[in-house]
Every structure is written in C-alpha cells, then in structure tokens.
Length: 297
Image 1 (tube, rainbow, N blue to C red):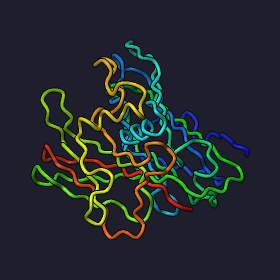
Image 2 (cartoon, rainbow, N blue to C red):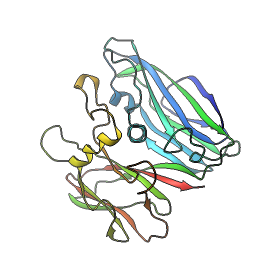
Image 3 (cartoon, one colour):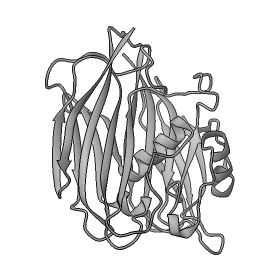
C-alpha cells in the first residue's frame, strides 16, 4: 500500500471568511489543518484559539461527511487518538508563536485502507473552513492544510461526523432528540453550555439512548461519571491549570459505542423506527451533539 501526503493550502492568511478547498480524488485517510499565529499580550489559550475557528466541514456532492465546530472536532480528535490536538509552546510573551493542529478523520484509525473515504472525481469532495479574524488573544494567523491519500485503497466503511444543534427545550428535565437512522453509531459527543466550576449542576445531568423506545446500552449515564470515561480515551486530565486553559473543552463528554475500537458494540440503527438520545437537562439551555457514524461504502 502506498500513501501520498500533499499540501492543499500553504501559509494562507486567516480572515473572517468561508474558505473552500477541493480535496484530492484518491481515497483519503485524514486531513491535517494547522492554525498558527502570535500571542497578543499573554498566552493565547486553546479555548481562545478554537473560538476563532467557527466550523470545519467536508461535503461530498453536497452531502455532509464532517460538519463540526472546532471545539467538537478537538473533542473528536481526543476521543479517536487518545490525546488532545497539539498546541505548541505554553509561553506567555507577546508576539510569541502558538500553533494548533486539528485532524479531520475519515476512519477510526489513520492509514487504514479498509476504513477511509473512497476515491472521488475532481471537484466532488470539498473542505470548507469558516473562520474569524484573530485579534483579541492572538493574531497574524495563517492556515495550512495537508491531506493523506491511500493509493489503491478500497474501503468498506468511512467515518461520518456531524453536529446537531439542540435548542433550549424551554424547561429543565427530559428532552428527547432524534438521532440519525441507517448507519452504525460509533459515539455521541455531548457539549454542554453549563459545566460546573462550583456546585453540582450540569447542563445535561444524565443521558440515555432509546432504540424503538427501549433503552439500548446507555440506560442511564450521569455527567459526572461520563467524565470518568475519559481515562479510557484521553491520557491526561480533562483540566490543566487555569493559566494554560482547558486541556479538553471541559464541557464535553461522550457516549462511547466502540470502547474496544473493534466495532463489537457499535449501535446498529438500520431498520429501526426510532433512535433517540434522552437528555435530562439540569439547565434550560442549548446543547450541541456530535454524532459519529460508520458508513458502509
């Protein structure tokens, strides 16, 4: 098997815009997107840098393959690769450089010819970067994008990662949200607005999955205990000292249906009438769900 790593965007000045890039036609393992800039006064934190990257999307003939806000892509990278995206130089000086790289995955593992995005025709597969103009925390930012192609790969599956923006339900208590039906679900990421620094109230107190109105896998999972699951995926603490910002966006947990990474426990939705996640809301607020699916080619 042969791979090609190539540059798609070089030292592009980051601005308030939506930038579209045609992706290569060979089967794709993953993309690497780097955002590098300079501190304005003191250290630009992970949260501050992510805030200037609105959304990252990949579409195939208009259909979403990946559509996530930067915070959710960072959490997905942590989930898949057992480590946070690399952010260089924990330094405090103004004008010193910081570089954040995010991985856009098309399979649960990189360089997997059995699980990657299949070959396409020119212009069919597009990356879209929706960004702000960095100014307050960091500036003079540039974007670089590279792709890893797997020559001759004939994948059986690829990864689809999309975002569901859930509006505030109008009250605390149970809130049912429909999940996609047809593909196998690898995981559901839950990003809350409220994640306690003091007290015990979480935006989402508990979560469960219902398939055809029956509990499936997650009969109930409390937010506090879901943070404990990070030890299986993320080889670090979910928080660091305040000066360094959060290591993982600290309002994100996930319901994992691939705990061993071998597909044994994937949530099968094909042929089902209803697949829902039931969130017991501790706060009447908006929530973001990242649904990670395995799509058969």
